[in-house]
Image 1 (cartoon, rainbow, N blue to C red):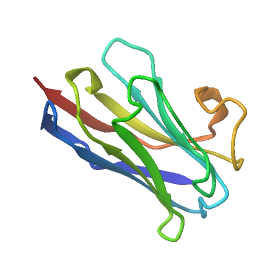
Image 2: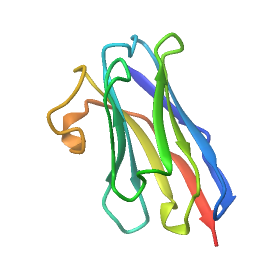
Image 3: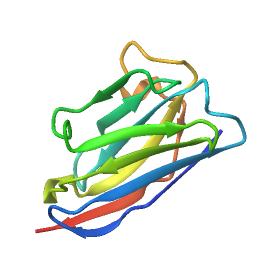
Length: 125
């Protein structure tokens, strides 16, 4: 499975971005998917996760109510809609896939076998 993240960029505080994670090599329709981010000098952190059919989602407290994770299995793509962006959201965002329909600990990065290359999101104040 190869994952390609895109959609990052520079945006002002309060703005919006939509990240995409396109899969290739295998269908992602039976995989749990997630987004993590990593700011300079910090560890990678969980942002959001979604089950294989979109029926279950999980969010970090810091993004709840502002970000929405979704998926289109027909397009083999997962999305992260980010609204009301804050400077502290600035980071490289990574998508990840796990070979299970859902995970017992979706916030643990060790649960995921496949990772995309990351896309930079910069939010200016």
